[in-house]
Length: 192
Ligand code: B4P
Image (cartoon, rainbow, N blue to C red; front, top):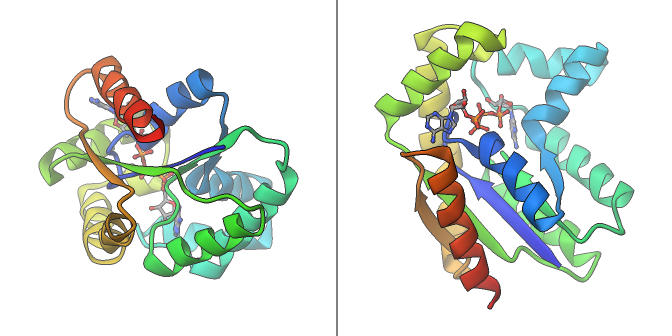
């Protein structure tokens, strides 16, 4: 089973690269951002609570996203593997993911971290905001807050996987197709 964590700051290209990876490796795509936006679109109570935090560029509570991933893993027990996009975003989420996967006698194969500098991230988020309609992309203050939340709450997740010797950094600046090739080369080295 191939279980990938695609990691990186907001706007690093996790969603962009995930779309390509799921096709190549036949993986189930679990994006907590997409799952939360579906809850918002459906107008659920969970979605309404998440929206207040997401619109400000803040993280949704761990138990909410862990519960969503737990549900999706149970729903997809026949999958060839998973790509976790935007999850885990905190160390407790990473620990919970290990526990959840252990229930299915599997584990994370590798974590690919997309490395992009803050100025480029802000530029991409604001550019996406011109067309996405996403409230969290709408202004520079919110975009900067998201990058700052990443640096304080999410960056330590890289150490968690580094300690397990599963951390691989990939330069996330350049052509989307070139970055994809680099990611694939690293995955193939990791599973060889
Ligand atoms: P997410 O939906 O995960 O979104 P993201 O971090 O904004 O973006 P991503 O890295 O996927 O960027 P993309 O490919 O789109 O999170 C949204 C919010 O949900 C969070 O802030 C949080 O509130 C909440 N949330 C989600 N998961 C959570 C969790 N686990 N715990 C708690 N809260 C959680 O790329 C961005 C832009 O760059 C696009 O326009 C793209 O076209 C462009 N781009 C991509 N690659 C490029 C390249 N190589 N060159 C130039 N542009 C590129």
